[in-house]
Image (cartoon, rainbow over all chains, first blue to last red):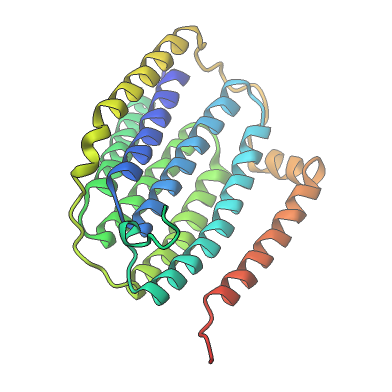
Length: 100
Length: 162
């Protein structure tokens, strides 16, 4: 029998792979994909807890997270496209006009 | 027993594809790895009796969001980007963070019970009943959010006419 801890540890590992990716990659699109990866790992934890306490509300929260992620992807990708159109680059090291 | 085999297959695919997502030089391969992660996550959802979410995962994430990603990647100029090494200075800190988090999780996992056999109704029918009664207002609000985000995205990404 699989224990909930396995799922939670898998979710933690995926989350930290996403965090690590944000540290080592410099491309806006890859950073965005890492954020999606982290959202997904959190969804997995939600579903695991929902199964553990036998309550459907965890799954409903995941449903909302997925829909908000879809909206976020649409707007975020439009912004990335706009940045690329005006700066001709998607590397965050070169997007320094705000001294970030 | 077969459950454990499926879990190992899906979990291994997810972790391997996630690593390939952050280490791949070509962005297209990164996006394809993310699709693989999402697919195996759908399998894990099935193992957790969340059939509706597994379908949503495939249809919305792998189908809609990743298609959007691939379109944008095709519009944005792809350069072979070397995985940056000068940022590895913080590697030790990250490793420490990972170890701490892993240790904490390991400690917690000792007190987490095993899955009880399913006693509640986890079917799609029960989920949708809950969604359309208790969570009706957030559900409608999500519809407004998605419509406005689509309109906003179209407005942001339109061609400037000067």
